[in-house]
Structure formats: structure tokens, C-alpha cells
Image 1 (tube, rainbow, N blue to C red):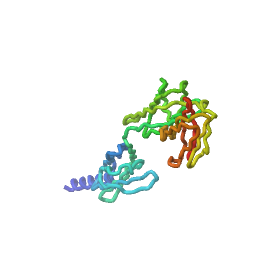
Image 2: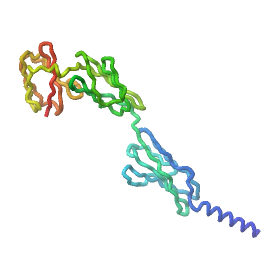
Image 3: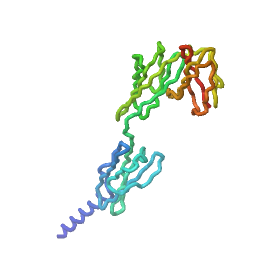
Image 4: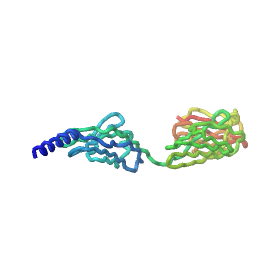
Length: 268
């Protein structure tokens, strides 16, 4: 009997030495989730009477407590946790503790891109700029049989004929694709006639346009390439009210005697 008691005491001593503090057997893993889903971090440990305290370290190093269960689940307003790291402090009934490794959280919108672009006139070519949202890859079709698949957000293209072209931009990401097409006529700066005078430029309220020939129409395009105003004065002079337009750069396309001319103005 005495030997059995001694053996039991020996086992108790071994047991207490093994579980002197908790031992983590599985650390939390990094997570990448969509903005409308949940993130789960779990830790597994052995020990007696274990308690769990999850800590968050945000992107600037601030630390705060976020949960007290073996599995930490984050759902509501999960975007606030983007770029944060999480770790768990495991404490046993004796107050001994162990700290897990950190696991990072990346939150993605998981939304398809929205394609958009604008163009501007340059010397002998047209320059395009993508304003697409969430695009990872861009593919351009210039409407004259030429394409560009180099994933460029800004690029220029030359046209040999002044006619109506339809330029298409296709935007891709891991969650889908979107495309947009816009039509325009390229105008070389060499076509701008000296017979037109525009003043003042920059302009605040009223722009005066004078010509040696009848002005048939004036079209105003914003920097995104959208037509914002069209006038048909059929006269050699026009006073154009600009006060209702937003500040920025505009392109005026003037038609006179069957010819087109383009001028750039700045609205203050």
C-alpha cells in the first residue's frame, strides 16, 4: 500500500510538472474574407481550467481586447478590422499563461470592378486615362482595330483618319469584369484654325468666341469626355455663359463651314 501511495504521488508530481502552464497545440491562422462575411480565429491548447483572452493589434500598433472564447468570430462592421492582427492569451486555473502567435486579417470588398475612362487631346494623338474602380487588369480597344493588353491605366493612341470611333475599356478583377464604350472624333491640333479667337481664357463667367466665318455649332466636353452643352449660334460671334459650369478644363469643338476646330479652355 505504501508503494502505491508513493507511486500515486509520483504521477501527481509528473502531471503537475507537465501542466505547470498551458501548452498551445494549434495557433490561429491568417484570414482573408469578404466585407459581407465573418472571420474566425481559433486556438487549441491543453491545460487545466483554461480561459481565453483575444487581443487585437491594429495597423498603427494599438492593442485592445476583443473576445474571451476559444474561437474569436468577427462579423459586424468587419471592415474596421482590415489590416489588424489577432493573438490569444491562454490562462489556466493556476494563473499560468501562454501567448499564441499572431494571425492577420485582410478584408476585401469582393466586388466586381466598375469600368470608366476619360480622354484628352494631345499633339497628334488622343490620351486616355482609366478612372475604373477596383480594377486589377485593364484591356483597351481603340475602335480602329488596335488593342492594348499591357494593363495600363493611362496611355495615348494616334488615329490616321478623323472619323467617329468607339473606344472600349474592359476592367477585370478576381470577382468579375465590367466594360464601358465611348464614341468620339479625334481632332489633330493642326486642324485648329487661327480664324477663331476665344477670350478670356481662363474664363470665370462669360466666354467670347469670334470667327471670320459663320459658327454653326459649339460643343463643350468636360475632362471625362462627356458632352455638357451644345449651342447652334449661326453667327460670327457668340457670348457663351460659363458661370453654371464647374471649375476645370473643358474642350470646345467648333463647327464652321463644314470644318471642325478644337480649343481647350480653363473654367475658374
